[in-house]
Length: 479
Ligand SMILES: Nc1ncnc2c1ncn2[C@@H]1O[C@H](COP(=O)(O)OP(=O)(O)OP(=O)(O)O)[C@@H](O)[C@H]1O
Image 1 (tube, rainbow, N blue to C red):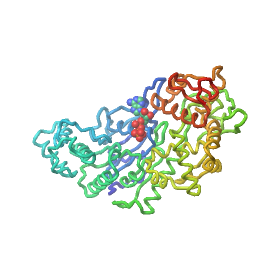
Image 2: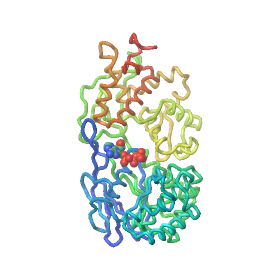
Image 3: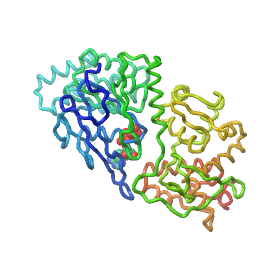
Image 4: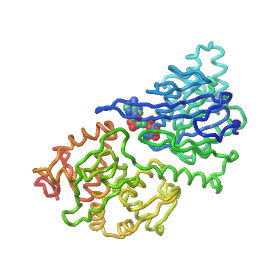
């Protein structure tokens, strides 16, 4: 399947004879309430003739943003995207896109939806029809030409999405999570048909880039996998997948590659954002006055408090992983039942979690020192064993101590509450500070997680009516 002689060279290596797309030092910033958010930073990659490349990364790492830059739907803030050596300004003429949501026009038939792409390219009506019918045939939609999207299943709608992209015979097919909205069987079926079309040469494209957060999907489809780091997004790793098609998901080689990607993704540390000042004014706060055991806390990445990143005041630049306390407790209990160590792929399988759902919980367990990822495995710590074995009350107390010790936003809220005369804090003030760092949606997610953790650890309460965070000793608190 891999027609490229250069498929194992590093991302960014150029070869003018086979490079169809060159992304060179691309950065992308978006404006936020309080300033600017860097989503992509110095991304360099090439897409070469004859290869399928998968772009993997955590949620929010900038995969779709990069895809949209390549398609020319948005312009990079700096750096360039070139198609066949020509710098792209505006829509990239060599690409066609398939989206997760099928984006079909409901008032047009299948045939008319597929013809749309050709109409935009100025192809004459008779030719349009002929080519659209051929594309419909190739993707297995024969017989559905006159159907409207609402008459079709999700899988058939996505086939229309593919037919619409393929009918223009783009050099480069860009796919943004094209199977995510489909059920498991349908997506499996469509994926293998695409592999077949690609292998037998009926796919009219020269290269394809697929954005996914499904590791197995990436290993199943791609000749190369690029892993995008987060905050900001940049190429973190590149893996060549040198397995013949069709690939056996249960083969040891396939599983080894899946494990390798898990290792790369969990190896990612939550680092302070670049270029932002670090809060000062270190001050120790223990979970329970006098009862906790404040130690020299480490932040994810192993940075000692006060040395570089977090300070006792709670450095908000270090994000909380989006894990609920229920999920966290469930994961640690599962790990304890499994003897203390389990493969991440096995955990995801058992819980039927996508990687994006599992990784924040793994991050949270690591942050709170309840478990440690090691390569593709998660290993429980002594703290974790105690936590899994404790009754609810003891577990909450232990959690509270660990949250104050290791989770900067939780520590910050606890500290401010204890220093305020009223024992109350306006959530909106905290939110405004978070928005300047994270943008609106992520700021709210950060505060929601902190409130969940604080409530569970009985460190503070949140009164939605008055939008205040309250110490449990506050007169308005329910405790
Ligand atoms: N137009 C925009 N304005 C402001 N922020 C944006 C814009 N588009 C994307 N972002 C932000 O950029 C970050 C990366 O988004 P993007 O959709 O590229 O990530 P992703 O890796 O594709 O995520 P997912 O896997 O969840 O789809 C997110 O934090 C998102 O909120």
